[in-house]
Amino acid sequence: MTVVIAGGGVAGLAMALTCEQIGVDAVVLESVRKLGPLGVGINLQPNAVRELFDLGLADDLDAIGIETREWALVGRNGNDVWAEPRGRYAGYRWPQYSVHRGQLQMLLLHHVIARMGPQAVRTDQRVVGYETDAEGVRVATVSRDGAASIIEGSLLLGADGLHSAVRAQMHPGQPEPQWGGAVLWRGASFGKPIRTGASFTLVGSMDQRFVHYPIASVDASTGLQLQNWIAEISFDPAAGWRSSDWNRRVEVADFLPAFSDWNFDWLDIPALIENAPAVWEFPMVDRDPVERWVDGRVCLMGDAAHVMYPVGSNGASQAIVDARVMGAQFLEFGITTDALHSFENLLLADMSDLVLRNRGHGPIGVLGVVDERCGGVFDDIDDVIPRAEVERYMSDYKRAAGFARDRLNNDRATIRPGSRVAR
Ligand SMILES: Cc1cc2nc3c(=O)[nH]c(=O)nc-3n(C[C@H](O)[C@H](O)[C@H](O)COP(=O)(O)OP(=O)(O)OC[C@H]3O[C@@H](n4cnc5c(N)ncnc54)[C@H](O)[C@@H]3O)c2cc1C
Image (cartoon, rainbow, N blue to C red; front, side, top):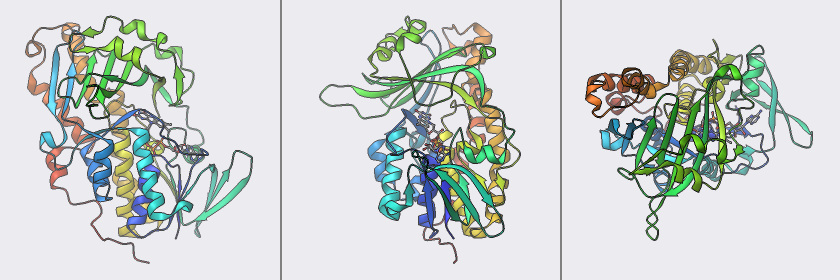
C-alpha cells in the first residue's frame, strides 16, 4: 500500500507527512542529489498554516516565519492605495506567515526523516516515467550516473513541480510553459523595518512593481531585518523568454536602472536591490489548465497540477492544502483510484479558475484600475477608487483562493486528529 511521491518540494513533503499522520506508507523520489534550502521568500496563507499546525509544526513554523500583520498596495508615487490587516490581525484563527522557501522545505524534510526514517526520501532519483494498471504503479527513475530503477507502489502522486515529468507523460502534447511578459528578479537584503515591521508591501503599477516583506526578526544589535523583495517588469511577450528555472542567478545591473528613482522617504528600493548578495531571475510563467489530473493510479498535485503566476501568494499554500485534501480522500476512499478522482473533482475546476484569475494579476489587478483612472498618480486614493470596490476585489480573491476568513474559521479540520486509513 505504498504511495510513491515524485518530488520533494513543498507539496511532496507535506504529502509524505500527511501519509505518515494517517498511517499510510509513502516514499518520496527527488531528482536532486541533496535537498538544500533553495529559493527566497514565500507567503503561507492561513488556510495552509492551519494544515501545518494540524501536522504538529506550529512552533517550528513560528521559529522560521514572520507573522504577517498587514498587506498593503502602494502607488508609484509612494501613496497608499489599500492596506488591510492579515492573518490573526484580521480575525483569522491562524496566522499568515512570510518564510524563506528553502527553510520551509528543510523544516518539512527534517520532520519527514524524523517521523518516517531516512529511507522515506530517496534523492538522486529523477522520475522519468510510469506504468499504471489494475495492480499498481511502476515508477521509472534515473540517477545522475545513469543507473535506472523501478519503484513499485499502489499510487503515484506527481508533485514534481513546473517541469513535471509525470504531467508530461499524462499530457504528452502540452505546450511549453506560458509566459505573459513579466520577469521577476528576486533577492533578500538587510534593511530597516518598514510600516508595521511585518507588512507585505507592493509598490508600483501594472507594468513595473516592487514587492517587499520581511522574512526574519529584527536583529537587536543592528536594528536590521532580512527582507525579501521581488522587482518585476513587464515586457512584450512576443519577444519570448529563455528559460523558466527558479535558480537562474543574474547581475542587478540587468534591472536596477529601471528602479533607480524608486526611493521614498520610508523605503529605499535601489539600496535594497544593491545590498542583495545574490539575485535570481524568473520569468513569470504558468501552464494552461488541463482537463484531468488523473491517469489510472497516477495523480498530479501542487505546481505539477496547477502552476500559477506568483501574484496571489498562494502557490506554496495551495501545495500544502492539496496534500491535506488528498489525505482526506485517502481516509474516505482508501488508497484507491476513487480517492484520486475525488481529489480531482474537489479541486480541478477551482484551481483552473485560479490559474486564469492569476493571469489577470489576482489581487494586484487593483493597480490596473488605478493606472487606468489616473495613470497611477494620485493624492487621495478615495478620489480614484471607492474603498468598497477594492474591498470587493480583495474578498473575491480570498474566496477563490480558499482563504475567505469566515468560511475558513468555521470549516471543520481537513483531517481530524487521530484519523487513520483502514488497513
Ligand atoms: C529550487 C526552487 C526555488 C523556488 N523558489 C521560489 C521562490 O523564491 N519564491 C516562490 O514564490 N516560489 C519559489 N519556488 C516555487 C514554489 O516552491 C512552488 O510554487 C510551490 O511551493 C509549490 O510547490 P511544489 O512542491 O508543487 O513544487 P516545487 O517547489 O517546484 O517542488 C518540486 C520538486 O520536485 C523535484 N522534481 C522536479 N522534477 C522531478 C522529477 N522528474 N523527479 C523527481 N523529482 C523532481 C524538484 O527538484 C523539487 O524539489 C521555487 C521552486 C524551486 C524548485
